[in-house]
Image (cartoon, rainbow, N blue to C red; front, side, top):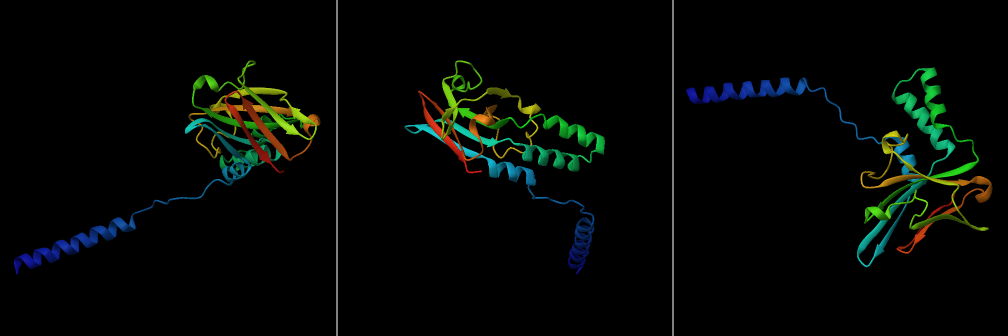
Length: 196
């Protein structure tokens, strides 16, 4: 009888303890994705190049245009609760483009580090846009430092083992989309396509 009473008392105490713990839980889980990351993902095209069963390269690229920059500036101002002056300064920082170029962000992984050399004058890769007028070479190719890139938190791919490049083309030479971005060299060729 004594054992039954002790078990009953222990059960009541355990129930009370669990009830009090359940009432004091104040955590929330959010499994929503940032809409800006979704927008970047929708713009991103991916190509892979293989030699036999070995991966030579993985290329992810997207068009970095004015509408994407405006969307980022508005989202950043909202999420960081910036005041009007701070929001304007943040927008001006990413809106330096005068509209005369079409800019692609390319994230490149290569099997060997020395193959990842797009920004070098003597790169083993040729990058161009295939247009109805023929191939158009970039006006500039520059390496991007990830921690200074405005979209670093919105990339839909893991950038750790990749190098980021900004590849710009003169808009008057290529016109409007569709765009077919080609990267070719002795190791192979790959291309990405944007309809609009």
